[in-house]
Image (tube, rainbow, N blue to C red; front, side, top):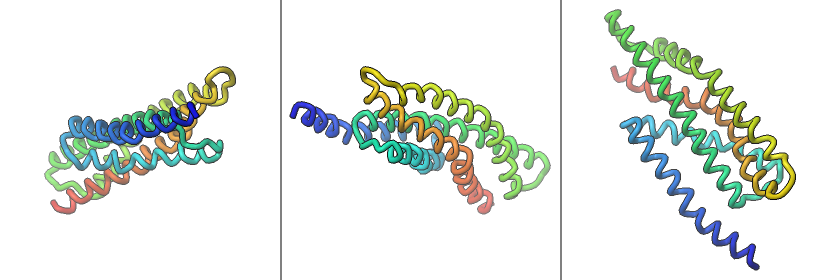
Length: 190
């Protein structure tokens, strides 16, 4: 009964630690961007990065535990960081395109927006792939390791490995699409 009671206490702690963690992430994002739209893009795309974690957990037949919760919290932090960096580069190339368009004496068009998003996304493909590859390569030995504590460590590493795959796809495809939808509204309004 000691292990069961420990698990119940740990799950009770996770019920307020996980929302608190996401709340802190939202506050830090708002302090960074100073606009709620960009925070909404990052937080709105964050669940897509968790898809890979859930699938790998299912394929490995792991149940949700405290270790899995810790892995998911770590994944959320890394996925948020990847998203923030992508969003910064998308905004940078958008502002560069906006200056170029204004210098030409015309208004920003949808094609200009698409071009700036492609340019901003292309700048981040290799660094994102390298980041994901380094994290996955570093965690694979932990996930497949044997020995003392390996059962717990593999449950921390598994959500990170599965989630990194979907986080990279999300950052390169879903986040730029969300950014396009947001910026396209401002272009349409004039």
